[in-house]
Length: 233
Image 1 (tube, one colour):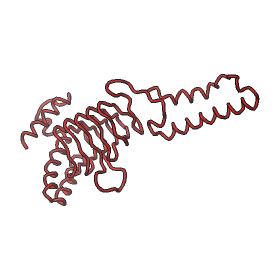
Image 2 (cartoon, one colour):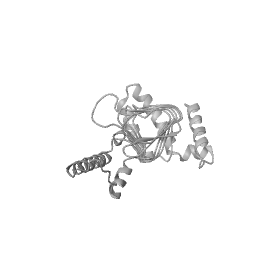
Image 3 (cartoon, one colour):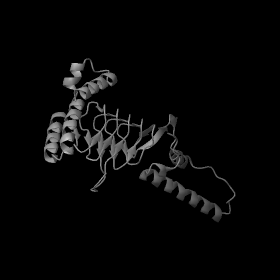
Image 4 (cartoon, helix red, strand yellow):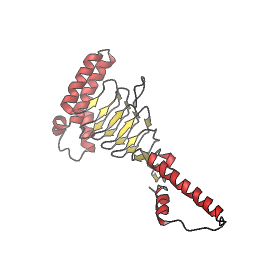
């Protein structure tokens, strides 16, 4: 246990330029206190002391502002920076060297039983306020932007932003999305449907006027809508 505490403190010193001393980290970093509470509570949970583990996790939440269910499985060197409002659900799985910022939720999407929370693999960073929901996997070395809502699996070495979350970088290369269905955005799908209907109406009018072979310029207002649908991120 002491070796893990030393490892956690060293990890904070390596990652947070605001940390001035090991004593400061020991006394002032609520994220570490929450992790240490979790380790004790997880041991109790694994030994069948469910009520005691849950009660102590509530004490930890009251003291730190961070809620970690004792049934979650968390690897080494988890760094919860700032921490207030972080929620980690019962069936969440977190690998090694993961960083979570304030307001992050690893939650479920319904009342189903069994595995219903996310899995974060090694070296994932999740920005403030991001929500990762459901039994999905976020691959190694991924970055989740602040405020994003992630509902689908994320491949390794990807960067995700937005609501709903969509990949903007993969393997260090920018990803350009041209199909609104790729991000499952209802507003974008509606705009795409409107643009499609406008094109059909134009073709019908041209046919009725006997000008089907005449190409007319696209109105500027419609062109702007169609350009927006290109998702040149």
